[in-house]
Length: 254
Image (tube, rainbow, N blue to C red; front, side, top):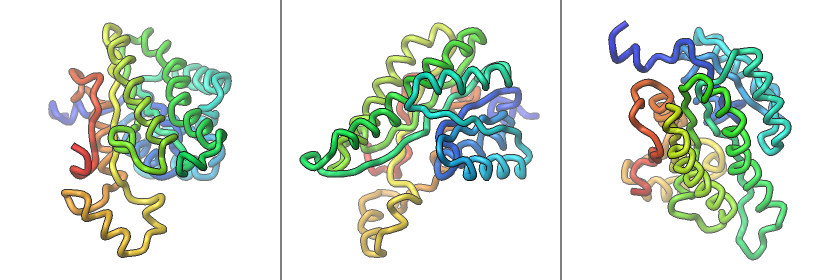
């Protein structure tokens, strides 16, 4: 294998992707699996979707397993991560992708809508990182990649909870990067812009065209665009990169 292919390879690495049952998490899990990582596919409620992700990884020649636990629960995270470590021997790559949205204007936002978004999108990433770091420290090698959002950098009307959580992920990323660098654990964030799927599927053609006009590259992003950045940061190609926010947004936010 040539030099560049070798340092992109994830052979003999074990990955955990939270919220990997569908959408972006599924694409990330598939990308890591196709490049040799053994992928633990985390889910909470979407059991069937998680097994579909596992099937896709297997069809692509990769390996993995499902890993059910609720990132909102510190106790459940410890249980889930302990099970992975006992089964796989450790965790090398963590992708904190699990997230939810409960949009609404601030004056009408319920306490529960604020709290649940913060619990999943920010606290969940902290709980999982805290649990996984112990095995990475023992190995003196690790990659933590947090999936933030353009909303966390620029803000977005009607998304005060989501934007605050995603901004918090960037702060968490930078703090952990400084703390863990001496242990050869690299921590970075990927900040996607407007990506296919989700709310875009319900938009009228005229609304979608208006969104495209806001993006210098003239198109919405694909989940594969984001997964490519995660794959790069997971590999030895990114050995000298930590504490950074990689923007995958077509120029929407610079």
